[in-house]
Length: 373
Image (tube, rainbow, N blue to C red; front, top):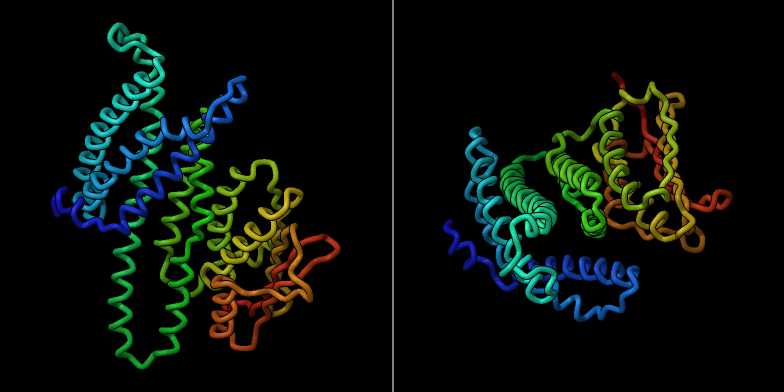
């Protein structure tokens, strides 16, 4: 598909999504500039600042199909990854040189920071390096999202084709269980994604580039593991905890000193088999409905132990209690846990989400039979 066709193929829905994303970035940047100006003793007008930022990010929006075209035309899925890497690097450099210089010209024109008709290279270069660094992070983030979205789309199509073939078999029970695992694996909380992107942008604006780069890398690893996790119903607890830790590492940057993790895991449980991605919905619920809902909530406590022929997983989070009588409206994540445990262990398991009034929080408990190695 040519670049022209890429632009033509984008419908109104796609352009609205791009517009919403870049407006979101424009609002974040405007807020940062606004509050920085107030801190410096100025009295800025938010609308004026937003209108100043708008052309910059609309320019990024118009260039986004170029990035989509490059990602589709030269993918990293082939054995020869050197050529795609070279093309991506050259294209990215050219786009960044163009957009960074145009942005500086635009900003100098409306604010008069520097007279370009009289400025020397030495005067212009510091502005350019600063702008180029910020644009590089934005470019890397956007390319990462495009590549992941493309992989998701291809994987989804492949899964659909495989599902149609499998429907010819008589193993309906197995198919339903596997379909639920796929639904859980491909479930990404949009609030988590946008909160993480917001944090990365904020860190970049205040000059914490190393932290923002590290967080971008962790987000990419998290999304990659979500999409590329092994196609197994059961994995070792140690492998499940790796994914659990990666999620908390990302959230710990966003919540800074507010997040405290206590862990007590029986070493003999690490090699035990557990349902794939069984902890992810629990920790997402703990963060979303516990830690994020109360400024005083900070503790996440994970206990995993073995008693007789059963392994018990207990996850506690500080925060608001469940509604009256401890009733919980189960979302997709918790419903998937309940259904998967039922299919894997029938009635030989236990799952409960309950209030812990003494510690002022909520505890999720899962008990499953230990695997027979």
